Length: 151
Image (cartoon, rainbow, N blue to C red; front, side, top):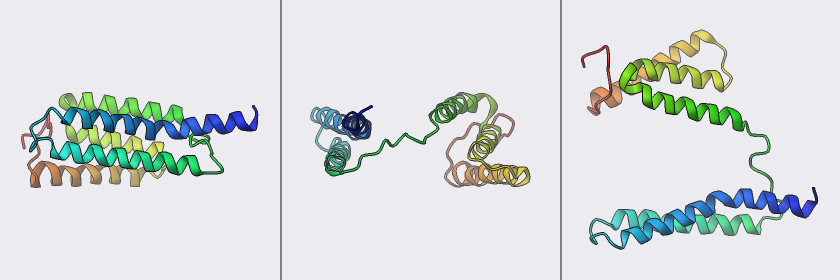
């Protein structure tokens, strides 16, 4: 592949996300025009910020001399599998409950990230789940699905 073609491909890959954010920001901004003025303030501010950040990112990327492919050394397949695990987690929450599902996903996340100390992984997964359950379920009173517990 020629150097110019490689640069163009890398530039297109790099500009994909800011272009998406720019289009999304414009669409959100346009959708706020039909809202009542006081209801559309927050989405309007967020959309304007999205547009400004996307434009800055596009300009910054276009001014770079050396554009590298951001996915060159990434583990795309691993990321897709993890995305499927998160989708499964979402569906498992009401059936299995928050505690068991979150322990399993926390444990899997640590494993995927390369941790192999099983004792620390178990303690961390249970600790993460306990702390998040304490904060969200008990202190903030967010209704979390608890299948086996009546809390």
